[in-house]
Structures are given as structure tokens and as C-alpha cells.
Length: 313
Image 1 (cartoon, rainbow, N blue to C red):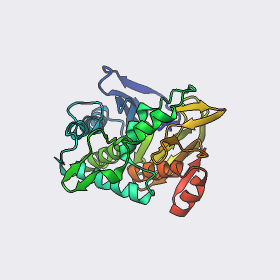
Image 2 (tube, rainbow, N blue to C red):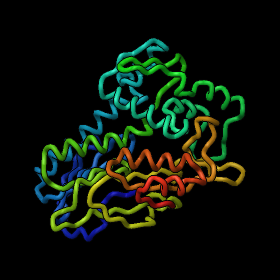
Image 3 (cartoon, rainbow, N blue to C red):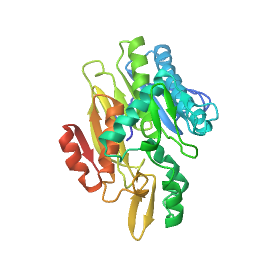
Image 4 (cartoon, helix red, strand yellow):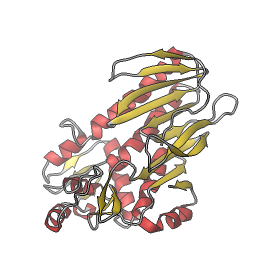
């Protein structure tokens, strides 16, 4: 999804910045700030023409994104996730925020029938979703599957025990969670309408001045970043997309997306190329979009049963 405005931009004022800071731009009567987090482009749009006011809010959103990324990244040696992995099977006492995410992960595992499992991230060692044709052999996949299984962890607040050799990966919920938290912080600071967009996961606080919606486009999964399939108007709430547009392999003439069934270690077959869900929060939207993909050919039936608005590509 491309959350950028697609309205006539007219005149613009730009404030450049180093790559690791906010690049700010005024486009007629609103401002947009762009930065990088979660290994990709992020932006926040604020319904004001005041660059100073917009910068304060956009930097608040950026700081929250970077805080969540630092705290829960599996790549950093100072993150909570690394601390849990390094414990190698001994209990770890976690803080309230981490406990909340672990509770959410446990709920997702139960409600998905085991399809959503934050211990399945180790399967990335077996798969490389680079658009090529390489798939793991049975021995490799079996070896990594032995390190998967939420039922093997022990979680009793505030103590979390992860068996040695296993890993957790909060990437399936972390970015959407960060969108919602950033939005909460902005709403506490200002009554201005805004749109938070972290790598295509969105939250809009409300309509713009004059009761105008925010305008966004849904990426064409066949040409990500180059074309859109739908134009959406978003006044309030979260939007998230899940699919195989950028991460996949080709196997025996079939396109296999990066979302794996943790029960088999194999990509979900028969799933839509993309699923976009609209919900009250970005986290809810992202969770339902991922659940839909995990239901494979039954994705549409699953979403119909949830009573949410969605688009399938």
C-alpha cells in the first residue's frame, strides 16, 4: 500500500534532512514527513501548513517507531528479544509492554488454530524469499521445524521461558503495533488530523479539515510500487496489507509467498496475492490480513465471517 496523498499537490515547500532524520515537505495545506524505520520507508501526514507544528508531531511518530524497533528487533543485541534468546531456556522477567505483546501473540496462536506462531521465525533459515526458485530440502526443513512451537514455551506473567535453540519473532505484529502507539502519542499532543504510514500499514486519526478523507492507493501485487489497483478514502481507523508482492519464490511453476504455515514449514498455498483489511486499529487490521492469508483458499470466507471491510488482490 502507498499511503501518500494522490491529490493535486500544487506548490510545495521542502526541508531536506540527513537519511536518518525526518525529511519534511509542505504540500499546500498539509505537511508530510518521511523517514526510515523497520527497514523501509515511513511517513506521517499532518493536516496543517505549519512546518514547525508538523515537525514536532512527525518527529514524535518517528521516535516511537524507532523505540519499538530497538526494543523488539531480533537483529539488535540490546533488544528484549535478544535478551530472551540469550537466556537459553532460563526464565526471563519481562516488562509490562513486552508482556502485553506476548499475551497478544498467545491469543493469536489460539484463535488461529496454531497458524499464527511467533516461534516460527526460525524458518527463515530454511527459506529465502528473493523471487528465485530455491526451496529447502526435507532434511533442512525438518531440522528447523523442530525449533517451532508456541506450545513449548512457558508464559506466566511476568516470566517467559523459551527453550534453548528456539526464537521468537514479533515482526508479524510489531510494525502495526508501532503505528497504533505512534498515533496514540500524536493524538495526545494535538487535535490536528493525521495519517501514520509505516511501510504501508496505516492509521488515520480522523478526516482532514472540511471533512475531507485521506487518500491512499493499494499497490498492485503484480507491480508493487509501480501501479495501484484501488484508490481508497480513509477518514478514521487502521489499514494493513499482507501478501506476496515482494517476498516469494517460484516452485514448479507456482508462486509461493513468504507467509509460512508453522505446522508444516511450507508457504500457505492457494492464498490470495494480497489481502487488505480495514479495522478500528492498525494492529487488528494487520492481524486479520495475516490470518486471512494463513487460511489460504478460504481467505475470503474467513474475512466475510469477521464482518470487516477488505480488499483481495
